[in-house]
Amino acid sequence: MAIELGPADAGTSRSVRIGDLTIVRLPENPTTGYRWQPDPDDVRLKLVDDRFEGAEVPRGAGGDRVLVFEAVGAGSVRLHCAMRRSWGSGEPVEEFSVELDVQPRLS
Image (cartoon, rainbow, N blue to C red; front, top):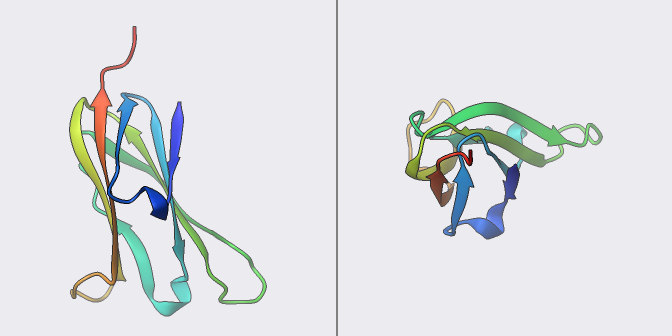
């Protein structure tokens, strides 16, 4: 099973099961230098895909950063992403987080 989350889901809580995918789709324009960077808890969530989806024309157009996480361990976890420049160490310009309750897989 998979759930898809976006900006409107920020600050909410969701339940998933081990093995489920959580797809996070956030607006991004990488030509600005700012990019969504995940801060996963590898004990409970594993980042399995990180890609940009957007129009090829016009060049430099915005689109969505798509981050796919797999639930790998039971327990509560904060799925957190921050928009920042990869070369900068400053505060993020935007943040996204959702609390996930990872339940054991059904037998």
